[in-house]
Length: 169
Image 1 (spheres, rainbow, N blue to C red):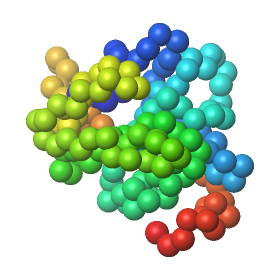
Image 2: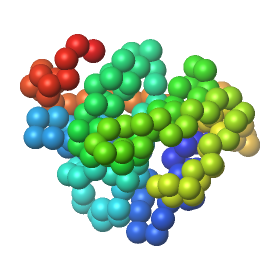
Image 3: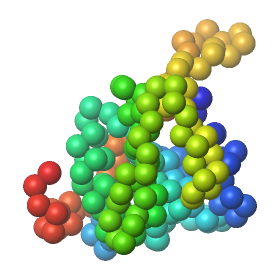
């Protein structure tokens, strides 16, 4: 099951789900490309998000794990992102962070077949194991099944200037 489709079916009116690649300028030095964003409807022609989205989701991969759990988490926190979800497809799990008094706190960690039933930032149910099951092949399609999530790795900006206040990763 594709996380973007699950979220799109649940987002509040006036919002939309954007899958990577779509830029979010988190500060004057850095533009990140989260794997999935939930944002107020931007209209056609929008090239970049200039304010925090309602929700940002990162999907871990071996090459992005450290960046997603350290650098991006701190950057999103500093930018005022209210909700940050991290999906780990290797050990199917979902970690949910909420911004409280300027700091992320863990709201929930669910794994495998355990559902996460969100009420905020909007009602939705996500089951981690369902995110990584191969999708059924399309009728008549000779292609192999595909998985419902794909990890993105795009990051643009001058990380060294941004990282000054964050210490070692």
